[in-house]
Image (cartoon, rainbow, N blue to C red; front, top):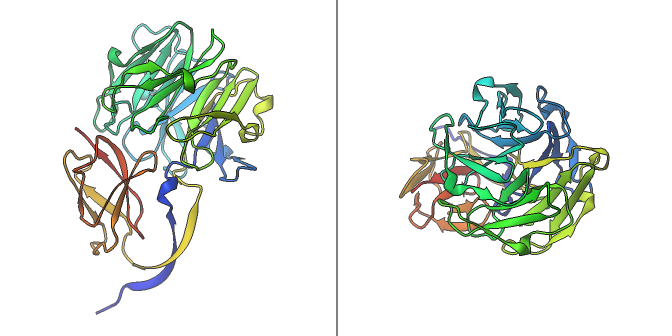
Length: 367
C-alpha cells in the first residue's frame, strides 16, 4: 500500500494572536500592517477601492455581504447614498467592483454621514449602524445567503451632538461589543459599555474609556498584537494614535504617534477603518517541522452555524490525535477537548477551532 506521508515545513498561526493584524483603510486607500512597531504600515495600492469617491470625508466599512468568505465594502461620507462594492477577488487578495444593487437607502435619509458594520447580536452576520445627526440607527441583518436590513430601534444610541462617528470592539472582554464615538459638534471622544448581552445590546456611558480634547474619528483594533484593543483617531487636519497601556478589561489610552500612517500629518481627511483585510490574522508565526499527508489540511464542522453541538473532523478523514482548542473572537482560549463534539459550554458567538497541523476553522453558535 502506498505511503502518503512525508516531511514538510508548514506555517501555522499562534492562536493567541488571532486578531493581532489590523490593517487600515483611509477612505479608499489601503495600508497593510507589517507587524513591525517601528514601521507599522506598508502602502498597498493594489487593494485600494478604485471607483469609490475621492473625498476628504469618505469612510469605508467592511463585511461579508454575500456570504462567500471574503470582505465586501460600504462607502459613506461625502455621498448621498450608501455605496456598495463587491470583492470579486478573494479574502487574501481583494478586488473591488461597484455593486449598485447592494446600495442601501435608509428611510427618511437626507445625507448619511457614516455607516458601520458590527455583529451586535452574535449570529455571525454583520448588522449595520447608520449615523444620522444625533442618533445611531441600527439595522439587523435578517438575511440568509444575502443580507437583508431590518430596522431595530431598540439598539439605537442617542446623544446630544451631531454627526456621530462610532467604532466597535469588546473593550472589557465580556464577549459583546462596546462603542467608542466622536461627536463633531462637541469636543471629546466618549464610550458606551454594552451592559446588555451579545444577543441583546444595551448601552451605558463609560466615562473612564473616553477622553476630552479630541476632534477625530476613532477606529479600534489590536495594533501591536498584545491581545488588547488600541486606537487610531483621524479627522480634518488631525490624526492621533493611542496604545492601550491598560489591559483587555480596562483600556488606558497612551499617545503613540509612531503608529500613524506616513501620510497622516499631510492628510486633510484621515478617517481610518481597521480591518484584517488580507485574512492573515496574525503578526506572529512560527515555522514547525511536522508530518502531514498529501490531502487537504482543513477542518470542517457540521452543522455550521450550530445550536447545541457541532461535530469537528478533518477533510482528509485522518484521526485527530491532538486536542481541539476553541478560541473566541478576541483570541481567548474558551474550550479544550479531545472530543470531536463541541459546543455544550459555548455561549452564542463566533469561534475559531484550532488543532496542530490543521488550518483554523471559523464556527458560529446560535441560540
